Image (tube, rainbow, N blue to C red; front, side, top):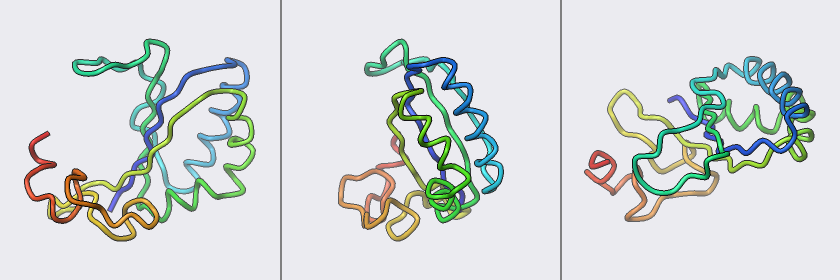
Amino acid sequence: MAAYAISEVEILDPDQTRRYQELAAASIAHYGGRYLVRGARPQVPEGDWPIEERVVLVEFPSMERLREWYASPEYAEALQIRQTALARRLLFVAGVDDAGDGGAAGDEGAAGDEGEPGDLGYAGDEGEADAL
């Protein structure tokens, strides 16, 4: 099942950000990832979103490959540069499998996250995720 890295990004240093993007892109490709959205300014129909923040969405073949990428030596230099290049919030989420069950409990979700009632997309939340 595909897994996604979702980043909420604020650029702090444009030159460092360009270097980060080069290194990150090469490492993402090495682990089978691909950008679906890169640096987009979102339209915000509900809630609040800081005007200067952008969105990055990267798809990986599996949560395992996504986690391998994040901890990889290929990504390490980019991760170091990221600390001064940009501020971000980073999320890892499981995609929807062919049966339509997404984010199911188990090792496809966040490490150690078994899901809880009311957490959209987890086993036992029948119908809630579809309501969105």
